[in-house]
Length: 127
Image (cartoon, rainbow, N blue to C red):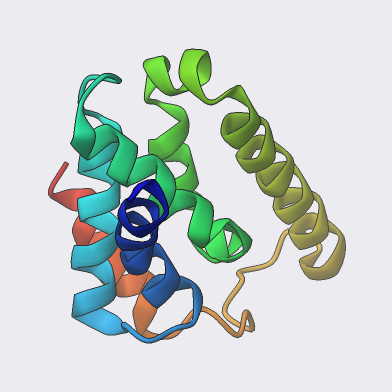
């Protein structure tokens, strides 16, 4: 039964990972995960958030601002330090590669600067 429950918890994250949700739906899904991560650590919704996040860790570098929001959740550092460390490393790699490749220029040549970041910005403004 535990395997089935874990599978259900990871479905939203898997949809995000495989780019099966886009634009507004992606923003709503990411907001849902972020809201879940802010809940008490002993709640089922927090577990849902961490399981979902684990599914799309490899895509987090596409959304640095989202990563910063995750890093602001203090209790996540205590319960899932490995997730926090992964996000911090990803942000460090992203910022160093941007400063090397762009020379401090605007990142408008970034392949991910299309509609998804704009959607995420709408999500972040609602915080």
